[in-house]
Image (cartoon, rainbow, N blue to C red; front, side, top):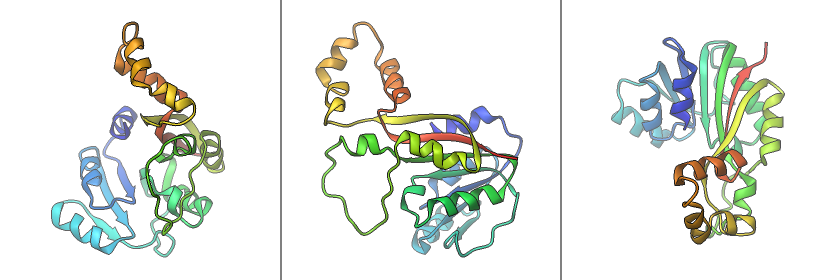
Amino acid sequence: MVLAIVRSLRLTDPEILDFGCGTGWFTANLSHWGRATGIDLSEAAIAQARAAYPHVPFIAGSVYDMTLPAEHFDLVVSQEVVAHVEDPAAYLDIIARILKPNGYLIITAANRFVIQRWDYGPDPDAHIKFYPSRGEFRAMLRRRFRVLRTTSAIPIGNRGILRLVNSYKVNKALGWVISPRHLERLKEWAGFGYTLVALAQKLP
């Protein structure tokens, strides 16, 4: 879904920054659409990324401690990072500072609505976990960005209303009148996906 959004922007040779790039595979995909750079806090992950994708620049470190060039990037991609930083507002301020005027942000976060209705087993407490609602997600972005669209991805969940929404029997019955892919898109549009996805543009 994120790459589809990147494609839809039709940017010409953009400077792209991938926050929380891990071992770099997604940054390498982004490099097909522009000059992509990956950043991650884990030095071990960055070492793997550099070894696997030597043609892509990677940086190890905390975004709070490094000085990135102001108004340099056309597009920032941030997947499943904002929920795990100490200060989400400050994190978004950093992104706004480094984006060019009218630059784009594609950002994702785990969806509280689904997290609360999905039995996914033990959850380690060793890291920060701020899971926003769809409304909170939009509100936190609107401080510095124009929110162009929001959706969700990966419909899942087995508690409350999601037990019905994702019921095999219900979905099989609906399959007689609506295609499985269209049904999945309806769930994503309704906010029943595990991941919230937003496309936003830096405010002037």
